Image 1 (cartoon, helix red, strand yellow):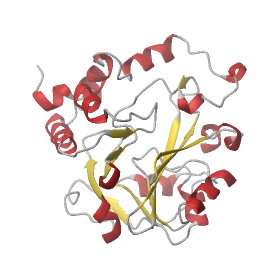
Image 2 (cartoon, helix red, strand yellow; image 1 turned 120 degrees about the horizontal axis):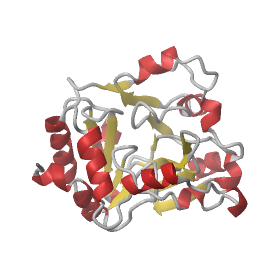
Image 3 (cartoon, one colour; image 1 turned 180 degrees about the vertical axis):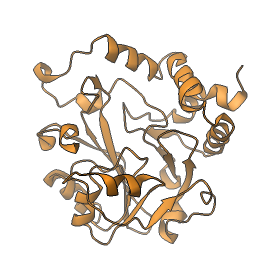
Image 4 (cartoon, helix red, strand yellow; image 1 turned 90 degrees about the vertical axis):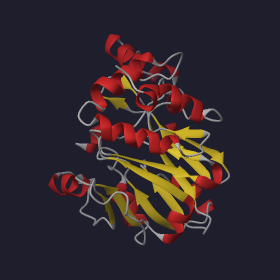
Length: 274
C-alpha cells in the first residue's frame, strides 16, 4: 500500500529549495524496501508562459501549496517520470483540476488495477509509447521550453526532460546520485537510518563518486541488457542536450557539472563496451 511509502510528517522533514528562480525541488526521505535510504524528490518548473509543470510530485503539504502559489499557482502539467513515481498524482490532480496528466505507457493500466485509496483513476492526457515517442507532443507552451526523451528500453519506462532556459535535466530512476544527503537533512539524527550491508552495497552501485564503476555496471548489465541498442540511442540523444544541472529523484542534485557526471556514468553507452 502507498501508505507505507509516505512519511508520517512530510511538513517537518521536507526540504524545499530553489535550484534556479524557475526550478524548485521538494526533497523527502524515502526507504526503498523499507531498508535502503534513497530519498525522494519532486520538481516544479515555471514555464516561460508562466504555467507550472510538476515532475514526480511528492506530498502536497501546506508548505508545498504555498511555494506553488508563490510561483504563480497555475499548475498545467503533472508528470509521472516513470511507472513507479506516481503515488501523489491524484492528490495534485484534485488540488489542480485543470492540469494535464502525463506518463509512460503501462502506468494508466497499473493505476487502474491498484486497490489503494491514495491512487485515483484520473485519465492521462498524454501517454508516451515506444511507437509514438518521437512524435508525442505535450503542449505548445511545454514544448517551447523542453526537450524530452522516453527511455522505453529502461525497465521502469523512464521519461527524461531537459528544461532549456535554465539548462536543467530532470529524471527519476535513469540515474541515481546517492547518498541522499539533502533528502535526509531535516530528519533528526536519532531517527536517521543506520545503513546495513545491503544499503551500503546499494549505495555503492548508485554513486557518481570516483569512476562510478558500480553504477556503470548496474546500468550496463542490468537496466540496459534487455534492449541495449535502444538504451544506447536514448543515452546519446540525451547527451546532445546542453544541460549543466541534473535533478534526480534519488540522491543529491548535481549542479554545475551535470554533463560531465552524466558522461562519466554513461561512458560505456556513449563509447561502447565489451
